[in-house]
Image (cartoon, rainbow, N blue to C red; front, side):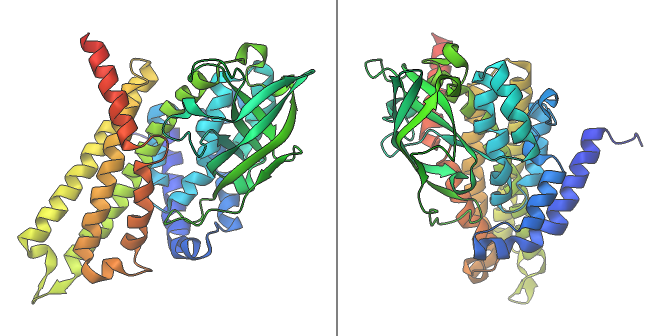
Length: 384
């Protein structure tokens, strides 16, 4: 047999870590809403805070294909683990990678890659979720800097963040998708406060909270991209979200694999009516649909990742992957509970927890309905 490639060896190491150290702690993480420090340390030691950040800035510099293969592994356990590192590698890190100046990337990306700091992506607002072009947070010119006022909602990692990528309107008279810029705001900046941690249905251990900005003053150098970054925030956000959607799709595939394992294992061992339930054809139908959904989602995500790496499709493909994989894992989680019967509804049973966790995937980083709009517009534009 040929020797394993470095990425295969790395994935095998991550797999052993996930299944040997994190999976046994899932119930504890769900109960305490906290990832133990021992897990956080191993995550840093493995370089997982920087898997998508270029090597020149201290990251692993994985391609999109290798990134989704890694996230398949991270998705096998509580999504709180991937959330811990996802924003540094995903939407916050990509704000800097796609929109930042050379100086900003050189200063901040190594800190993100090492896990020295945690970044947050501060885009969503109460009235600007699925349509961020309608955000109301405003930044006004004041001397040699900017003053930011507004509020952000459901911001991942906000309670533990060291720096926020804050999207704000810098031209109040511009069209909705115009006149938006991005600012790099350290959490210690006067006027920036983080609300209490949100109490969510699932994904416990992954912290979110509101962020308030009251006369937050930042220098010119805080604008992502420098002077050239003025009014480029919406495009930066859309590019970051497209990459992030593939990551969410891959996370759904990882959870789907886990749910397949839980479903098949239970169906093959649980006895009812004198036989294991997997011998009944109606249960076999549920298992077959689950395996098919999983395999279809996995193949789609890998195909979309290849196109993303090639630069041939970085918009419709990510939307297709996120839509299908997030909907598929919801169906898979529902079937897993059904196969488990009453046991699947009990706290402490893995499929009950994953059922709660999976529901959010159809909402964040663009709801399923937003993905449908993106897909349809791209398809119709191509036809015209």
